[in-house]
Length: 489
Image (cartoon, rainbow, N blue to C red; front, side):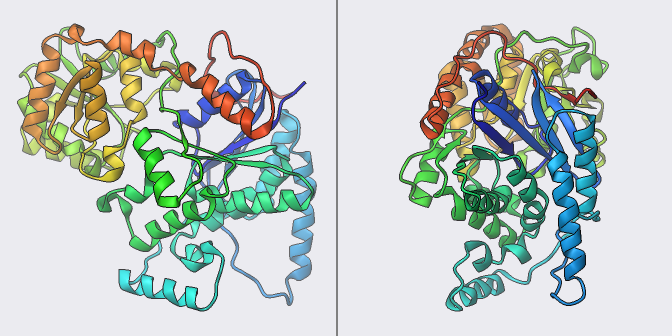
């Protein structure tokens, strides 16, 4: 008997997001029927794909919501378009070429659009005055009060793109992975309940969005709108989870939640690393060259300049390899110029990403790994990035900034060294210590203790309490996290 259908969805493609794929795989192993929606770029792929052992993935390009039309003149045309979409949606059922074709046609029927253009707001003061005016006007909808439609329009584009499909899939659980998809979740829940169904709502908060440092927030109004999306829906979730204990505390306190979110660290599954090449080989470095690897967000706000400048403080023969997603990356010319200014351009290498199944072997070619996320902000100090655990599972000692939770994890488990945030010399000295004898750190022991499989029982227990479903006990190999095209049939 097939268990409850769970539709998992987020605001971006799932290919480089292992968390949603790990949740889906665990649910499948526990007897559920997971379906993953991968929201692609406007010109991205569409149709049916497969994750691991037959988990259905539907790729959906983002569609810009059409401008609001008055009733005159276009009403019948809109009704006809709605009927066409309904017919096509009815065909998106089986996992075959016919359903993939129907999915693609459905996407065309919803409207082909250009990429979302940036929108600006006036000043912070003007934004806050506007919010207050909306409140005093008696508006109740939290998405309307803070002007989400104007200040973060992609939320409405996502709602326009996903809601019909979410409803059509007839889920027992809607599993949302980002604040930007929460309006779509609300609309789908409303429509499903109007049909007499009782879907559950699960929200996984992957970071403390309210605690993101100002340098990373972008426009104030857009960031406030993002937080408003989370605030509007998190209290309505039947179950919530997040990635660290401090973030769980923040979410409970800030949003006055009745139940503290469950914590599922963003750890990789325990597997045997396999792959055709390593970062060392990709960078063209010999076996005797000391290699420090960084695999993560390339951003000034995330400390990339600290580790590049810090190359000068490493042993003279050591090199830094950066796994760039994507490659080429628009920041690379600036980073190469920055490296040249500090006389280390010949010791900096950018290499491309690999698939999730090859990642651990790819990283294992380095000697130590670095995570330079600066401490000092609530979000960063509560972060336990997935990359930390990927590094450990690749067999690498860690060199991390003094962001609070990361630093405590590294020192408490004896798996590496800590440096002062934004201090290039401190980074170089810490990395040099790690390179002296990488084997002295308890990397293998800690990697075995911190794996995704160790959390599966708790995930399925939480899901069981929410759905009333008693599933299977996961066993055997975890399975592949690669997404491939569905076979025609």
